[in-house]
Image (cartoon, rainbow, N blue to C red):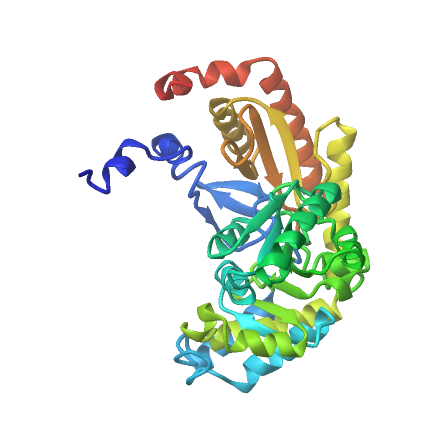
Length: 419
């Protein structure tokens, strides 16, 4: 019989095999200093395009004041225990009411983490007789949640309404046999490509099929829609989203999440959501902090306006210089280049060391082999000067990629890894 660890020791995985070359620099990097448009990386000042602090709330004095006061009053432990037993407070209820009102739903329920919460929401909503149909490019938390499902599930081609319709036809026939229902899952914004989910087209299919729609709007909440209520509001179909989930970890620059729906659905989830029933309550420091952050989302629209000023400047500038930014319709700004993983390492090192630009790098297996994706997250704290410096840097690295400079620099790394 094999030792369980034999496979792990022999195969570190498609990303893990690069650990000795990448760790501490390309992955698990250490950004230092106050969260802002400019931070420090390995002692050098860099323009930071990898922090999901969309509205620039993280380091505002008024935010830190509320966080500090809550920590001083309650510490990090209060309330102790799960909410059903001993960890429930009026402030948790207040935050739920305000979150629901903000996204135009009857009720909401707090979640300790978006990833954990989404998995548990999927698990609670379906039984083995139900069918799940979800976008193939959905976030890992959705994929992991679907894996918990004991029944049938189908994927549809990313943002392809014809593929969704075919899979709904299959799911409908199957549900008629099992006696179950259908849950469709998509995202408000797909965080890697920046595309909004085709929520309007999905909701329109309710005229033809019977299903419920669950949407993860982590990147849309606070950034899209007239009031920041997200992708559903942006597309005019918020009413058609049956279960809406957003995280506090992006626009709210904190920890936690919430799920919103009709009151009866939230009442059901409160008593059946295992990740919350058997977990400690969200600490008060995050609850009080979230109330302040949500108030700023409601009362300071200039934060979102400044965000989009920077988004438009960056994305329009990249397109004018001939860069491929895909079909993003959100703040997420992907830049697609052609090259190997070793070339990507050389390119990013050049960006950071010689141009002072820090952005996330995405390579195979997250995207197809031969592609390099540089992912930029504009925020309200960025300046137009940041944008100009970044556009100049990107023009330089593209030229070096195309003339083979990075291929020569990375040859030793590629040879060592057998690439």
